[in-house]
Image 1: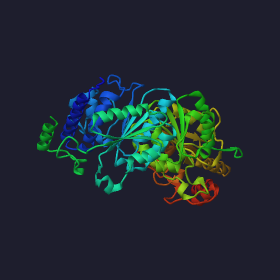
Image 2: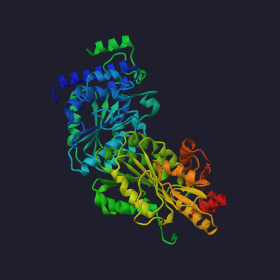
Image 3: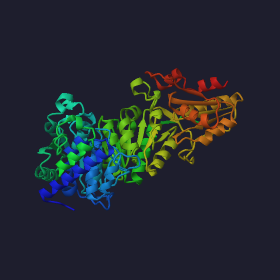
Image 4: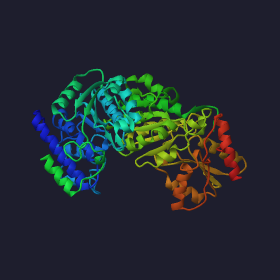
Length: 272
Length: 308
C-alpha cells in the first residue's frame, strides 16, 4: 500500500483530517488542533514510509511508532483506520464507554498502536527502548517518535535525547510537531523550547527543519533520516495548529475543544 | 538460626542476575549510575552488551525499559527504591503498569536501614505506592535464598513486578529446598500465643523475638509476608483464628504498607485487632542501620515488649 505520488498523499492527509474532525465531533471532546497539525506527517508515515502490515499488527520486524503526544490520538486512529487496521466507522465511537478508542492510545486495545501514551514526555524513552531492542536483535526495523513542541518542556525528553545519542540509535527518527502553540499560549510565552533544532543537534542528533505540511519535504526528510548513520535524527516539522480548517488554524483555544454541529459541517465542507 | 553469616539481598540479587543472564538471552539490565551499589555491576561485567547504564535519569530508565519490553526483552531495572518508586512513579504507572509490560523493577536500599544517607534516601512509601498500582506484583525479600529463587521466578511472569531489596546484610533464613510461590506467605513455627507478620529485613527481627520468647515459654509464629501483592489472605485469616495476638512489623511507613495490607484483609474477612510496628508517619534520619531500627522500634525487643 505504498503511495509515492505527492497528490495522492495529500488526499490521504485530507482524509485523515476528516477522520480527526469526525472523531472529535462525535465524542464532543478531544484534541483537534495538534491532531490536524500532524495529519500530513502521518499521511507520509502510514502511506509511504512505514514498513508495516495491517493484517499482522504485531509483526516482529515492523517499524514502530510512538505517539508521545498521545492526546493527538484522533490523528493516529484516523490514519490507522484508513490504512485498514480497523473500520473507519469506529472513529465515531471515539472516547465512548465501550469503545477501544480511548482518549489516549492504548496498545492493548487498538491494533496498530505500538505503545500506550498520554502522560507527556515519556515516549522518546520508550522509542529508545524499542530501537535498542532492534539493535540487540540485529533487526532492520525503524522507530518513529512523535513529540509536541510543548511536550519537549518535559525534562525526561532531554534525558532520553542523551540516551538516544549515547547508544547511536540511527534506527530512531524523532518528529517534533512545532505548531508553536500549547494550552496556555505560544511556546515563547509559556516556556520556550527554542531553538529546537540546535538543542537536538547539541544532544548529538542530526537535525532537519521541514515545512510539516509540505509532503515533498517530509518525504525527503525521512529519506535523509534513513540515510543518517551513527546517530539519531530529529525532524522539526514547522506546522500550523488546526491546519486545514480555517477557524481552527493558529487558535490555542482549539487545542482541546470539540466543534458544534455547524462548525463540524463547515469543517467537512472546507476539507472537501 | 545462624546469625554470623550475613548477606544483603541486593548482593543476592546481583548474583541471581548473572545466573539468569546465562540461562535467558532476553534478560537485559538497566541501571541509573548506581550499579556498584545495586550490584547490577556483576551482570554488566558478564554481559556488557545487555547492560545499559542510563545515567542519573530514572524516569528515562523506566520508560526505556518499557520500550524494550514491547519488543520481547525482559528488563530488570535497578536503582535505589527512592528513585524508582518515587522519582519514576508516573513512568511506572503509565508506561509500565497500565500497558502491563514485562518490566522487573528491582529496587535496592529500601527503608530506613539505608542508614547514614538519611531521610532523602530512605524510601518508606514504596510498598504503599507500588501496591496501589493495577497489574503490579509487589514482593519484598528477606534473605539470600529467597531473593535468588524469586528473581529467577519472576522472569517467567509476563507482567510488571516490583521487588523490594535492602542494603542491610541479613542472615540466611531459608534452606536451599524452600519453595516460594507468589501469593503464598511462609509460616515459621506453630506457636499460638501470637503471630508476627514481617517482611524484608524485619523477618529476622521477628525470628529473633520468637527464639527469645521460647526461652520464656511463650510460643509465637512468624509469617514472612514476602508476597505483599498478591497477599496471602488465607494465611492471614488462619493466623487470626489460631493465635491470640497479631502484630505486623515493617521497615516502611505505618501508612499503606504491610500492616495496612493485612488490616484490609482482616477488616473484610475476620475483624480483629492488629498491632502495627513500622515508621510512624515520620521521615527517617542518619545513623547506623541497627541504631535506626532501635530508634524507630522495628526490633525484636519491641515485638517482645508488645507480647509480654
